[in-house]
Each structure stands twice: as structure tokens, then as C-alpha cells.
Length: 270
Length: 321
Image (cartoon, rainbow over the protein chains, first blue to last red):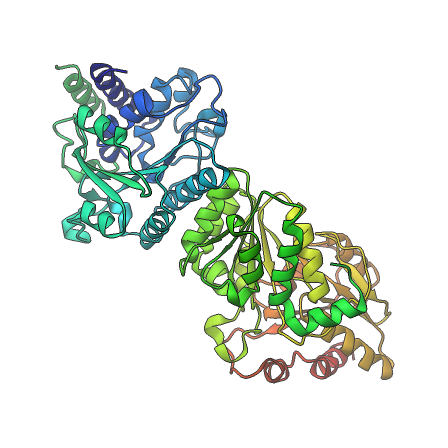
């Protein structure tokens, strides 16, 4: 996929996340999903190796959504990639659905793990990347972590082990939108120097504008030996919808009809 | 690893921890997909030889049990048959949410081996004891919980666990120079209890290190004219309800005996099963108190907590009357 196509992929994702959020009639995690769109579009549009007709393909790259509440940035990517159908996608948060507010492991739907509780997915990703190394197979492992999620100590346990094991087949992306449930990170638990923290733990850290597709692609394509890679994606929570950007009330909120139409309208303005 | 008198004597000297290391080393030869993890306790878990023999199948997570369980789950997801070990509270309680998400919710094929459970860690104190581990692990759906009776049964359990597909919590109780329950080969099946002694007056349902004490108590009571049936309920979950049904049908009172708090352990499991039944028998739960206990050597604590055979005999007699 070329850059404009990835941009279109991201735009499609934003539209779909607004659609199902509105259709669900419930509060959903919009802000932190909108901030993920370009990273996820790049992953599913260009970086990840997968077979949409065979989501269990053994050599596929593995993606773990460690920030499990980011499903609105995940299911639309699976839809756009052709792994899940429109019909399946439309079941979001209906009773008994496979697609709820946090991922539930379902390999046939391209969902590799169950998440929701923070600080777990990165450990599992370290295990998967270690398995690939020990079996000497080529697939790569990617996991998306929220910056708020790095409050969890287990994230740093995983970071230590990944560096110790020299997992150069593992890439962590931090969605560094500087907000979490209760507000701005600086007011809750300061995490001002994300890249330096990972560097100090022995990782190869790359900082990018998390909405600049070219920068994201270049970061993913950078080859690293004997060290795990972290892409610290500086993002804007609520990106793409002016009244949601950096307004943390949209961390988890319900779209009214008016808000939905306003938001969709903004997406359609080039 | 055949169960012979010579072997079991040797194993008993080593204790359950050392025998876990021997057993895993032995079975690994048949399981090239086995991965053994430790959280900086390989030397305390009898895993040194495994580490040296199968370096590519060993992974030390460092002192980070939460991450260890998550990593174990990632390895299991990619087809490894994973054993992850640490001291009991560090798995069952410090990493209980990792156990819940990975072994429970995702039902990953990980065997968590809790060494030094119960009060086996002696002078290291309550911080290292497995007093509440069964209560916590038992509440997690889908987890199988096994508490082997002696070192021979540790060998049986590790063999069975290597073959077993699904999450399991293996709880090792007792210490070095531990008593011997099994001197010969016997049939061991996960989920199927073993009646070790017949008796018409009371049914003693015990697990782990308490099986031997229950047998000894039964012998003492026999001299006083009380005949106790002794059941080794090595699998705490799923509970062998057929065995409990048989005990109830016989009409004898039931006494459960465990090296664990009576809140939520084997005794609770039996009580929960029996309470809605129309036909029930009296049931006494013997175990550790709802408290952190005075620490000493293992034998001192068993006596202090009235879990040694002599004390058990007195308590059983008082209940049976």
C-alpha cells in the first residue's frame, strides 16, 4: 500500500469507529482509538503479513492489542483488511457478540489474545516473540501499548525481559497521546520521557509523529539487530474530530446523533 | 522414573521440590516442545540440571512472576508445553490476575508449579507460605488443581501434566525428608481420587502432605476401635464428585484435611458440592486457621496447628464420638 492508500485506510477506520460507536448507543472508548488510526492503518495496510482468507496461517505476523480498550481502533482495521466481514463488524456490542469493548481471543477473526486488563498483552507478545526465536521461525510480533498502560509495572517487567532476550523480532508501539482515564498523564503519573525510558531498558527507540504515515512506515521498516524496537508514536487523543481532540471527556463517552453527524462531517472535509 | 522402594526413599530425602526438578528433566526427553520457566528460583526448584541439559527449553523471567505468566502464555499460544514455577504465593496471588487472564480467560496450556506451598517453607515465614493459594486458584474457571500426596505422586503428576492439554496449577506441599505414601507403582489419573484405606466409621478426604498424616491418624484410631477410610483427593479441581457421592452414600461422617486455610480449599469444595444434596453427612473441615501463623520448622508447625497425625487422631475421634 502506498501512503495515500494508508491515509485512506485510516480515514475509513475513523468513519467506521464513529459508525459503530454511534450504533452501539453506549459509551465507547473513542479518544484513544482515534489516536491509533494511522498506526493501525500502517500495520494492517502495509506492515503485517497475514492471509485474510486464512487468519490462522502459521507464518502470519502476530499483533497483540495490549491496550485492550482500543478496540475501536482495531476492529475497523480488521474490517478494512478483509479479515472480518461487514456483518460480523455490525455485531459490535450486541448481546452475545464476539466483538465487545475489549478483545476476546478469536483466531478466526484475527484476534490473537484476550485483553482489557492493562499490562498483560506486552508480556504475551514477549512470549510469542520468544517462541518464534526458539523455533527459529520468521514471523514478527507487534503489540500496541497505551502510554497510560505503562503505569503498570508489568510493562517494565516485560520490557526488561525482551531486552535481555534480544528480541529483535518484537516491535512495541506506544500510543503516546498523553492522556488516560482520569485526564492528562502529567496530572496523574508523569511519563514525560517515554523513548528515554525504553532506551534505558535496552530498547531501540524511535520517536515519530503518530499521525504522519511516512514517519510511521520508515520507523517500522528500520531494521534492528539484537534489540527489541519501540516506536513511540506521538499522537493526539481524539485525532480527526476537532471537538474530541485533547478533550479527555471522549476517553469513554456516548455519541449523540448531533455529535455523530458533526464528527462524520469533519472526516469528509479534506 | 519407576516407583520402587529404593527410588521413593531417595525422592523422599530430596523432597517435592527436588523431585519436581528430577521429574521434569525425565519427561522432557519425550516432549521437545516443553518449555520450563522460573522466576529466579531455578536453583531452589531443582531445575539446575534441566537448565544445563535443555538450555533452549529453559527460560528465566527474573524476579517478575506477573510477566513470567504472561510470557508463558505467549509461548503456549505458539505451541510450547509450558511449565512455569515459583513459590506458591508469588504465582497464585502476586500473579493471580495474569493466571486469570491467560490461564483462565484464554485457557492457555500452561502448568503453573507452586513450590513450597502450604507451610513447607518453614522459617521463611508466612510471606512464603501457600495458605490461600487454592482458594484463589479454585475460583478461576477452567483451571485444574493438583496437590500430590508425596514425592512419588509428584513424579506421577508431572508426567500426567506433560501429557495434559490445558491450564493447571500444581501445588507442591511438604519438605525434604518427607514421608512416603506410595512404595509401588499405582494408577494415577488427574481428577480421580484414590482410596488408600477402607474403614466403616469415618471418611477422611485429604490432599497433599495431609494424606500421609491422615493415614497415620487412621492407624492410631484403629487401635482405639475407630476405622477410618482414607481418600487421597490429589485433584482438588475438578473435584472427584463420584468419590464424594460414595462417601455420602456410606453414611459415615466426612472429614476433609488440607494444609491450607479452611476458607475456600478442598474442604470448601466438598462442602459446596454436598450442601444442596438431599442426603448429606456431617462434615468437619480440618486445615489451617484464618490467620497468619507462628513460624517454626515444619514439624513444629504441623503440631502447633494440630495437623500432625496424633493431633488429627484426637480431633477425628472427638468428631466421630
